[in-house]
Image 1 (spheres, rainbow, N blue to C red):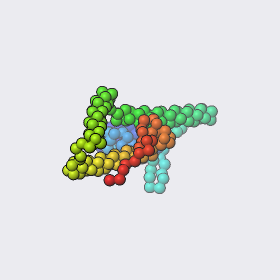
Image 2 (image 1 turned 135 degrees about the vertical axis):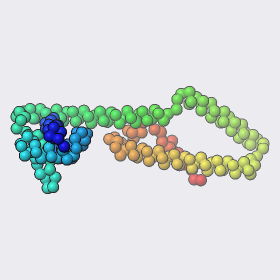
Image 3 (image 1 turned 180 degrees about the vertical axis):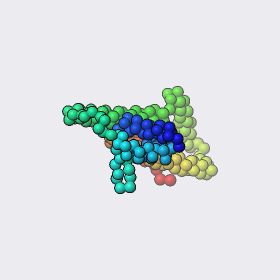
Image 4 (image 1 turned 60 degrees about the horizontal axis):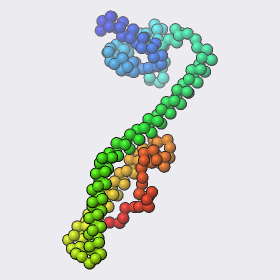
Amino acid sequence: MSKSKDANAAKAVVEYLNRQNRPYSAIDIFNNLHKEYGKTAIVKACESLSQSGQIKEKVYGKQKVYVADQGQFPDVDDGEIRDMDARISELSAQCKEKDEEVRRLDAEFRGLNSSISTEDAMLQLKQLTEECEACNCKLNTLRDGGKTVSPEEKDRIYEARKKYVKEWRKRKRISNDILGAILEGYPKTKKQLYEEIGIETDEDYQLSPPDI
């Protein structure tokens, strides 16, 4: 590698460490500079710069880390440090609040996405109302001694019931798994989560999947 490229790599290392002002290994510097310079060039530059005193080298076992020369930076008084610590605490608290707000809005967004539109709901209501009326007519006919259910239709009804109960249990299990995963990182109670999302459970209506 030419001296010009060596010099450019050394300059990039010094500028990066001064800008970040925190310790890095040579490999970290190589990766953080987006591999603009070869790994060998970065390692060589770090060793050369530490020997000349332009950066500082710290050894932890077999690991070497490099940091900017702190002597070039102005002293910071204790009051300024305390102010910075207070500001960090304040910003950390704000970040926590924002994270909670993001989680709440994300849960609300998922709930809205899983809801059907008013138009679809009206269509389903109309369809279910018609089905209910047809069932009531059939029930009244049976009560009045009309046509009874054939064995074939009875078997078909039992099979349909079995299918729907299995689907009920399956969807209930999937929903509980999803909600359990959300609750692992949710800062509030299960009840508060359900209220925010707008979930109504079988237990709210004293229901449970029947035996098959």
